[in-house]
Length: 67
Image (cartoon, rainbow, N blue to C red; front, top):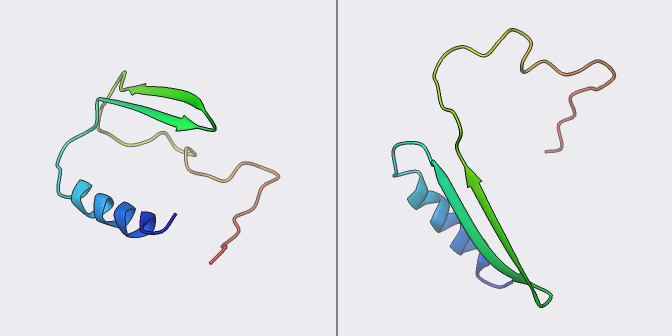
């Protein structure tokens, strides 16, 4: 859609100004005549180090750069 890219970029720029953590997010969209509702709720938040191996590539997979 024309203008969507710049609108999304502007929204992302504004979102970076907000400090904190989103604890609940809800959206309602119309897609092909159907209403789709979605809610995301934060259940737990904590700071600390991720367990070892959390960000390792699983066996049988490889990292691919697409850009």
